[in-house]
View 1 (cartoon, rainbow, N blue to C red):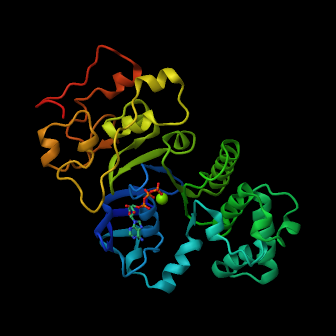
View 2: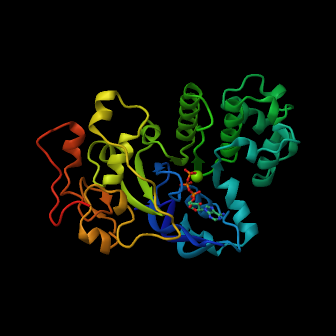
Length: 348
Ligand SMILES: Nc1ncnc2c1ncn2[C@@H]1O[C@H](COP(=O)(O)OP(=O)(O)OP(=O)(O)O)[C@@H](O)[C@H]1O
Ligand SMILES: [Mg+2]
């Protein structure tokens, strides 16, 4: 078997704050293959962006620190690279698109200058070659009059066009991995869909693996092969899109499905959204971190943090003591006869 593109092995990224240690990412492991499209989904604060920033080498010391773990990119441990080496990887081999393009674009330089700067930093080309590549990159993201638009400043572009430029910039050096962190949340629904389709198409043409971070399971549906569901710094469920949609094993995944934006009313009635709020990642509850919000919790859930284990379909994993006992699938299908069955104690 060929080497995975990315191996994240027991990654823990913490921040020291006045309130205490923030365990933003607390022991996650997963791999990505070349060309794979992976969705990372979870509520605000679950650790999605910190996961991405850890891979990008953008966790800022002294407050932020990767306390343990390995990040192997094409076999090389990114955590052993110095800043110069990491800078070559960043943008060249792993690129990231941020939620708000205005924070990533410099308002005082033209779009063309910023694109060319990225290209010159990572590719051994002349200025005129870099200019050609930049124009092509703008054309690739379907912005008309590319050579003209090179001379514009970021504020002269619409929000959707700026996000297209971020995609152009991200893909301009043909990275192996593109991390897109909520790339379309600031845009209207129609523009969101266009940009997602464009990103998907360009990534597919180039064989680029994509890690798509979003809080909306609906967004990953048409885009990803596999999904990791994150909760309070951990992965609580992972599987293929079909596993997650049609056979969820973790009550949190079930709840996320209920808060999806693309459901009809009948579907929404059968699902329920997750009540309450995520725990503070400073004072994590003992046992399962989802327990205070879970309708199926029993005694063991308050005692033991469940590990990810194989449940459901082949390749699917969930971190729930009661996965497989809970027939969430039938509940989604609207089968009234299947009440949740929990083996011990009463639900809290
Ligand atoms: N620089 C920092 N200093 C202190 N705490 C931080 C820092 N960056 C992130 N955190 C904390 O780490 C946790 C995870 O944050 P993260 O940004 O990864 O969440 P997220 O899943 O991306 O959420 P969102 O959907 O809102 O973007 C949060 O509790 C957040 O407050
Ligand atoms: Mg985030």
